[in-house]
Amino acid sequence: MQHNHHHHQNPLGHPSSLSTQRDVQQPHQHPQNYPSNSFKSLKQPQLHHQQQYQHQQYQPQQQFSQSVYDPPDGDEYDDRPQAQQDLDEDDNDDFFNGGPSTSNGYHPAVASAGGIGSNGGLLAPHGPTDRHSTGSPYQPASSIATQSIRAPSPPPSGPILDHSHLRPGNQASLLSYERTLELYRANAKKTQDPDLQFEFAVFMIDASKSLPVPANTPGNLLEVEKALEKREDLVREATSLLKRLADRGHPASQYFLADCFANGIGTIKNKQDFDRAYPLFVLAAKHGHADAAYRAGTCCENGWGCRRESAKAVQFYRKAAAALHPGAMYRLGIAELNGELGLSRSPKEGVKWLKRSAEHATAEFPHAIHELALLHERGIDNVLFVDLDYSVELLAQAAELGYAASAYKLGECYEYGKMACPQDAALSIHYYNIAAQQNHREACFALTAWYFVGSPGVLPQSDTEAFLWAQRAAEAGLPKAMYAVGYFLEVGIGTPQNLTEAITYYKRAAEKGDRRATQRLKASINQPINHPGGPGSVLNRNESDSSGGKGKDKDCIIM
Image 1 (cartoon, helix red, strand yellow):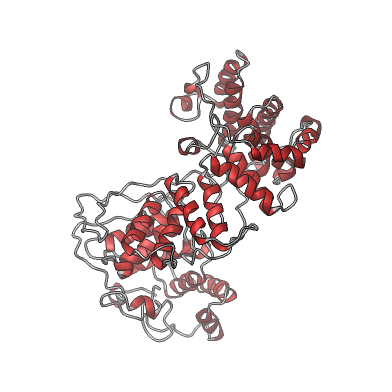
Image 2 (cartoon, helix red, strand yellow):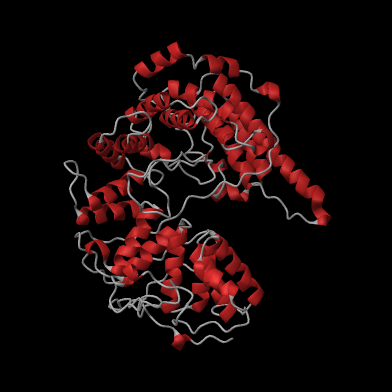
């Protein structure tokens, strides 16, 4: 069925005062990265919080693709008994009573170094930081994510040998991996400097994930096996070197090795091994490694590799917070706000911790900024007053750090004029795009709506892009997006008609509780679907959302 653009209803009534077209990254062009283009000669409106808008392209952190690695031999890691002895109560008392080391403490610049976690960044702390939610900060925390935080702190002094030309990328791309590794290995063997050897181990871990593996076809199975074996050899050599350095008391190696085990690198069947990771986190924390102290706290809080002990978790968090670790300060703030981890509920103390964390926020830990924004939107009696202007400023700060929840909330504010924000199509699309880069499913679906209706002078109407963004949101698990994709497939909007696939998406949406999908499946699939915008229309904005816009029709076939 051929779709007619003139049949679209525009319930959004998006403002068209901006004359320069605002481009949004299109999913089919860059499936792995969705940077938004800058505003080219776009006249910026005066924002209500008097903050000059400067668009900065946000590049999401690269993900670490784990490969199938053989674990090191069981006898290679022979210091576990000693590590376990370090966890004795008397020893821990001395540890926590001592001040943090300043030489290896947390610093935001250090956290920007490359990491090995699957999300390429630090753990999302506790609290209402779910990227699909902008709920109250008084939501109880669930658990720290199981992925890795950033790589350990670099040594205070530079490497003895200059081997920057051997790092992956740039000039190193001209060399084969084998030749690069040979040169790097030769440099590392020329010195017994542990920092240089540590960098070599990190290089091997990084090289193992970048080592090319041919396509798995019946004709080249042997080549695939050889490539995978090379990856396994690199990981085995790297973890063995890290283990030797850790035994010699090198904090960065202790932390990085623990991080590998926590992420299933160099372990049996690539499974997370917190039994081996937790003792190493503790050892590195004793040397003043702030990231390690924070990770040890998450282990104690969740019972990963140790008993679940809230009191000990708080001790580790305080140790990391003393070194200005933003994640630890944020976790303590949420715990004080909600009365978690055995702490008495104290909103005043909780806000203090959040403010401290916000002062040291990074792209990996922007959560405190977002929570303070939510608190200023609602206020806390006798603690924090309502200030919408400041709340929006905080959301903008977190959004420019790439935090999806803040970016999505701002997208809604500028689309519907919430929180005293002016309705602005360009800014709404911009912030939705930042959130969509992080696979925020609601933001992806919001871009579906924008592309479906378009915005004159800002965004061209495109059924194809509307379908692709809806499909992306559906794959992220959004039920209404699944129903939308089913409708697009049934009617043929932005994609060829395919009733079989349409039924599949309807069933997926119905299983997730979408009533419209259930009703559609009950009816005959051969029954013509209602005209877009009519009763039973595929996608409808909530009436509360529609009421905030100018001239927005309540029957939108996109939301």
